[in-house]
Length: 267
Image (cartoon, rainbow, N blue to C red; front, side, top):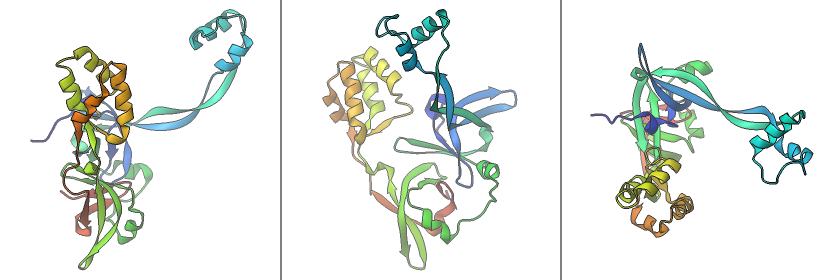
């Protein structure tokens, strides 16, 4: 029986179409008259105009208390009838790209703390005007760094290069599980037994359902979160997990179904 996911567990997950092209990220799940839908967003870098608060502070220096909040500064400036200085800044904005019926989900793949929704349709390919096609040997030249996903529901890892065997090529994949991780979900679950309130606050800061396992490279972030709640950071040591199995695996060319922004393997 396949695993099911709620909105919180899927939010931010990568969405890939049947050609291996990235369509966007999951933003939410909705229930509509004609079915249940997955909403997909893209993060767009755009220039937006906003109030130049620093200039405003200079203009109002000596007229307002030090350390006053930005919102209050703007409100006071308006009450004085001042023209608000503006500036252009770059912001990453979320834009809803499309709505996908759940019937178009081919699989939801997992590996480490990564989740990827793979669609059964060439949705992004159509958006880019790209024809459906089979992978070619030439695609291997740009294989390094691409995420490798099996349609059986596993994010295997990252392609690191080309390998060869008798009569055929393949790719070498560094498994996501090759790195030590902190089992954040289990840590918070256990912490709830003794310090429930602290555990709930930590959940709100770093969602364990979206981030069940945290790379040991981010240990300093976890240490700071625990210290902020008065918890001995040495607790982490009990939840560090070793990678399972081999650090690298080799995948035969015959198993590769699509090479796009990611590599899709057959079941």
